[in-house]
Structures are given as structure tokens and as C-alpha cells.
Amino acid sequence: MKYYKQVKLKNGKACIIRNQNCEDSKEVLQHIILTSVETEYMLSYFDEILMTDEEERTHLSNIEASPDELLISAVIDGKIVANAGLSPVSKLDKCRHRAEFGISIEKKYWGWGIGSCMMSAILEIAGKAGYEQVELEVVTDNQRAISLYKKYGFKIFGTNEMAFRCRDGQYQSLYLMSRRL
Ligand SMILES: CC(C)(COP(=O)(O)OP(=O)(O)OC[C@H]1O[C@@H](n2cnc3c(N)ncnc32)[C@H](O)[C@@H]1OP(=O)(O)O)[C@@H](O)C(=O)NCCC(=O)NCCS
Image 1 (cartoon, protein in one colour):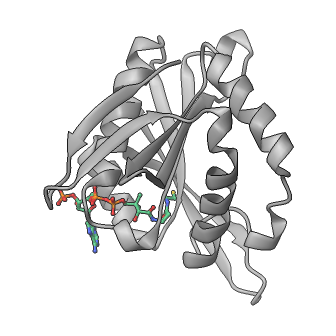
Image 2 (cartoon, rainbow, N blue to C red):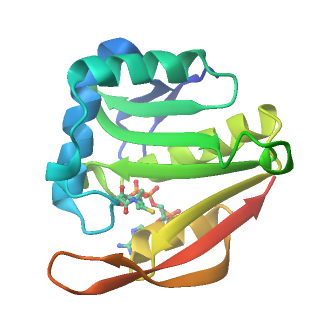
């Protein structure tokens, strides 16, 4: 699936929201590692991100060619500062109407409105792709993300207690959220 849009952020900065392609592989990997270090809300620890540049290139090429998956980046001054993705929950017929969503933004750029721009792009594309429902999981104390999701119509439909066991021995719960299209 394809997407390209130029937007003006709250602070007047120009931002391009566009598909990732194989040329982005190094920057995308750096972004994934950085955001895993910067927040406690991601699924992986930075040292668990073991994908090589070559593997990431292949992954991005496959996603770019896929009719039901999408990876987009927000680019400011030529630099990737955010990533978001949409993928089917399952390829099985009974679940093909459901998509999963994920997002990460470099901390320096939080509060600029990038999350809102990407969310809006994802919902637009998900509708065009024929999905009927978008789903996500979010750590229950990730207030900023929860506010973003509620602003775009997502509702909490459940809680997965003890979903993450952190290396310090603490557990994190996840809200399960969904939005009809
Ligand atoms: C969560 C995240 C995607 C939000 O992106 P963002 O670009 O900062 O969001 P925006 O600037 O578009 O703000 C979106 C909404 O969040 C809410 N918000 C903003 N700052 C907030 C804060 N400090 N506390 C609570 N809510 C806040 C507001 O409702 C805002 O909407 P508004 O600007 O219309 O008032 C981003 O902070 C991030 O990538 N965090 C780390 C990774 C992560 O947590 N990913 C989600 C995993 S499920």
C-alpha cells in the first residue's frame, strides 16, 4: 500500500508522511533501537533488536509490495523521526477485516502533532484497504498514547494484566483498544 502526504505541524515545521522503502533500512533500524531505549512502552529491549541491515531491507521491500500491510515514516528535514505500521491480525478469512497498528516517535519530537498526523494517515489507508476494524495494545500508564488513541476514536475493550514482565521484575498491563472504520 502506498502513502505520501506533506503536512504542516503545530510548530509550523514541514513534515512528510510517506512509505518506508528499502533505502530507509539503516535509519529505520536506528529509529527502532533509539525508541526502545527512550521509552519503557515498547515491546522489545534495544538489545533484542537483532535484524541486520540486509534483513531489514528485504522486510521493507516485502511490506512495500504487500497489498494489506503498510509501514510509514514521518520525515522532517530529511530525517526519519517516527514510524508507524498497519498489518493484518491474521491472513485467515475470519480475521481479514481486522488490522493491527503500532507507532513510535523519537522523544525529541513528541507533542509536535506527528502522532496525530500518522494516526490519521493510518486510518485513511486502513479504510481504503478494506479493513473494518483497527486494533492495538498499549501499556496502561502510557497516558500520552492513550490520549492520542481516544482522540481518534479508539475504545478500551479489555486489559491484559501482567502482559509484560520487565527486566527489573515489574509487570506492565496492556489495554486492548479497537476502533471500527
Ligand atoms: C504516543 C506517541 C505516539 C504520541 O505522539 P505525539 O506526536 O507526541 O502525539 P501528538 O503531538 O499528535 O498528540 C496527540 C494527543 O496526545 C495527547 N497528549 C499530548 N501530550 C500529552 C501529554 N503530555 N499527556 C497526555 N496526553 C498528551 C493530546 O490529546 C494530543 O492531542 P492534541 O494535540 O490535539 O491535544 C509518542 O509519544 C510516542 O511515540 N511515544 C513512545 C512510543 C509509544 O509509546 N508508542 C505507542 C505504543 S502503544
